[in-house]
Length: 369
Image (cartoon, rainbow, N blue to C red; front, side, top):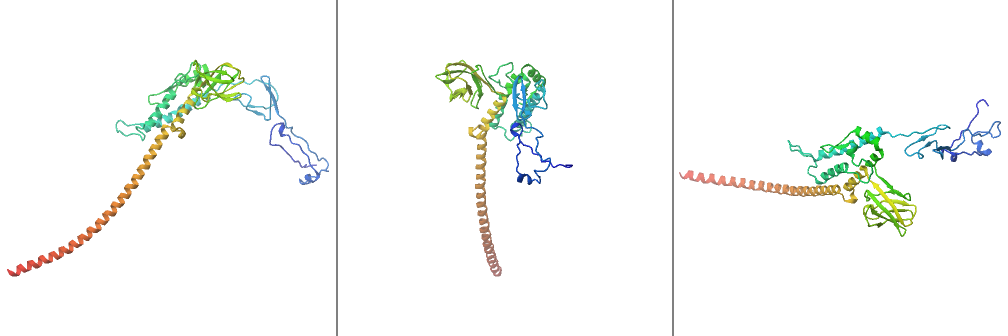
């Protein structure tokens, strides 16, 4: 035919699972205005639904999409055509520096805001809205300490932010030395990463670190299994505490290791090395702020806000009471004023009478003369 009619059908699922199979009856095809007996009438596949098959470092992989994000950690692969090649991955240190700079800027924004609220002008003696507020002063000190203190539980040359170029100025704000940060990234990027993020590790291949909770303290924990139950102890301590859990998954249930989650492949009795946890500045700040503002923890800022609310409520009650008293006083003054007007009216009448009487007396004496 000169202008053939085509019906194109495609699936919305990629990969071999999205293959489309066509079948029809004479009645159903008539619904599209087509004649199944017409010469040249047929269905054909224009593109076969299939999976993407490839290998990375000798490992065969099969995916339903040409965009693959779960083969190389942190990298997205877009498959264009068949062939072979080499994938080179490098660290984007410039992007890391930008993120660290954003962190410094964000911290400084909070720091300057707190400085404003707590400030006092030595000349005018004008003060910030929260000048002298202990809870806010405490928050300021906690934030500064979280930034300047040592990050425990990590290995490497860097355990302070100041060692990678982030230092505190006299007003409490931070300043970033990008050259020093760049040198640190070149020397030991994993160590730098641990300063900001949290990381857990194990020394025994039969044990896998899983995670932690806000109750878990950073550090090194000895692990042993006794009578089929994993037990944890602070490194070097002689007292072990049984973990809670079942099967392969367990967690510390007391002390500093509370909430430290790990997996064991065997419950055979014996010593299983150490489980270590380092908590970076991000988690430290998160914990400190959570302790300050979480209502369920009844933190100092929450308590302070509640106290201020109670004070405002009491003040409003006092204002209402004073308003009622003022209203009563106003009514009393009005009543007194009305009574005074009545008294003045009577006095005026009496004055007129008295004046008339005096005038009469004066007339009498005048006539006797």
